[in-house]
Amino acid sequence: MSTLGVDLVEEILALKKARNAVILAHNYQVKEIQEVADFVGDSLGLSIQASTTKADVIAFCGVHFMSETAKILNPSKKVILPDLDAGCSLSDSCPAEDLAAYLARNADKNYYVIAYINCSAGVKALSDVICTSGNAVRIVNRAPADRNILFVPDQNLGQWVIEQTGRPMELWKGSCYVHVEFTRQSIQKIREEYPEAPVVAHPECTMAVRLLADEVCSTERMISYCKNHPAHAFIIVTESGMLHRLRREMPEKTFIPGPTDVCACADCRYMKRNTLEKLRDALASLEPSIELPEALRARAEIPMRRMLEWSA
Ligand code: 13P
Ligand code: SF4
Image (cartoon, rainbow, N blue to C red):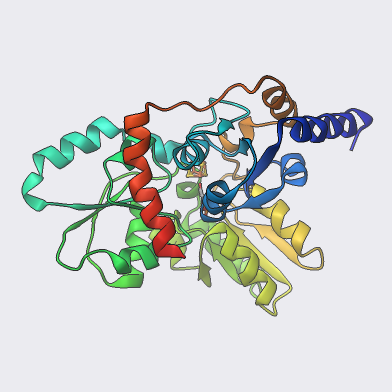
């Protein structure tokens, strides 16, 4: 790292101490942020960390819904996100007003709403329980057997959970713009190039891609799967930041980025908005911070707590 980079890291560590802050980073964050973080993980691990931290300030290096989730669980703490424009296409595909209107139009179905954590606080507040890719099967298996389930917002994850649980669910038609770029052809081609390498894919990928995978799992489970598998090389079908985490934890193994039809650079433009400079500035000014109307936050906390209880 450049002298400038080292200075920046030192500044961040000093500010972190002065603020009594914890730095949480998602597996898709850039290498430099992952390296300065106290905890790097998937949405489930990050939610658990956010629910148990003793810090006064949570510097959340991820996307908006993730830092909002930390605020839902910690109303009295300061939650900062280095770049407020770090959104999520999947979350955007289910506006709370649209969900509320859908539920009102279909009141006779008395839906049990299961929301993937990639959604706004407004959507969480309309839901019965939240899930992540790491616990979706377990959560859906615990949903009341006599209720119709509406699963929002990711149709691909929802479809995968139906396959795993056998539980019928109605699916909101949302998707992640990064994961739907992987195609059957692009993954088939790389599989033929590296026939010995297991294909590990995120459940936000389309069914055509998931059917080619040896393992479909959350980003955190990708770590344990690759650690415990005897293979030396793996094809990783998810956002590019994951490769850094995998290479850092298993320097002796080879991780091949799953390509799309046009490149091998599946970057989430939202995740990549956070930088070390923005993290330093956010720790210095405690801005941008996440604020939520209390009634909304309190309603959104109910399904979040249910998720944490059901995944314990
Ligand atoms: P994970 O919870 O598996 O890390 O997934 C989060 C996400 O945003 C995937 O696109
Ligand atoms: Fe959202 Fe997709 Fe980015 Fe994950 S990778 S944060 S689902 S846009």
